Image (cartoon, rainbow, N blue to C red; front, side, top):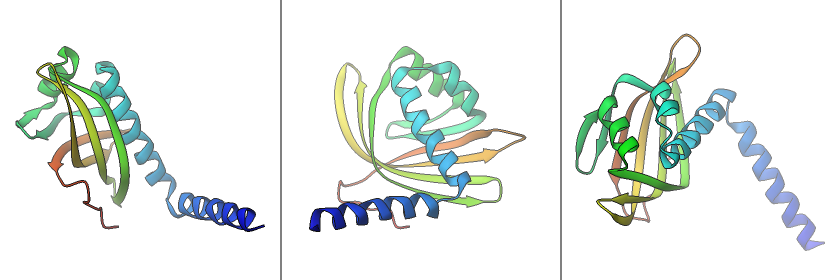
Length: 149
């Protein structure tokens, strides 16, 4: 009986969380998660359609443009192997969405695998019918860092 009650409570919490998110928030979270997979797969075609041509990318080693980010991904000079997303928060303001992901990123950099804790800030803007990423910023944080919602 106790096990059934606990299972029911977990199910209710999961359902209430998904209803608490608007359909736009759910769409943005899915897009963000898809982006991590596309980066791992080095799928430059999908990323090019997502990234605004004038977007900026801020990393630990510098800030660069969409063209440079796509080149880095395509050549594998940074290979985003896996983003283990631990927490996500979304804020929608008009046609702009801001996503914060707390992740452990496993990447191959200069031939070495490294795992780093980040809070990643993503800014998206909705155009006619699709979302375009305007900014992606990696902030190095401790693994105890929490995103306030």
